[in-house]
Length: 131
Image (cartoon, rainbow, N blue to C red; front, side):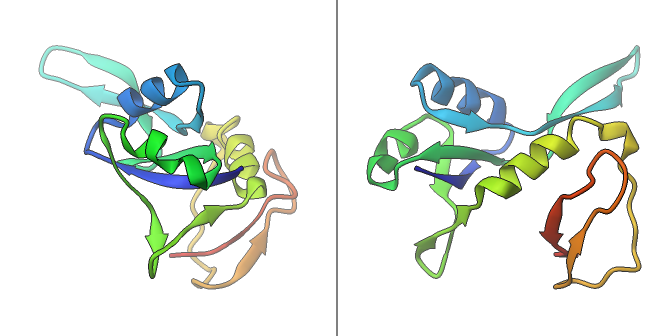
């Protein structure tokens, strides 16, 4: 079994996550809390960290069970090959989101560089800079 990124219809991430969980398929939807304002009120809302994406752990030969879920568009792939997300990246993402208020953006690192956090709540996490 491997982790795969799943692309969903817009604003269907939570619904797809619930349906997959009901099917006993392991799914991970990273959520962050954001303050939203309407004309009459402000409210904290849990939103997906990656719009239209979630991660699913399954054996690829059973992919149709995932693909037939309402709201799932496709399994993310590159040149026709399904993109496997390493376990350590999922664990790093989970660890990172345990302290969402301590995250800060830095812009001195260039895309393509491999980086490792050396202090703070995300110490030991590694990744490749995309942008």
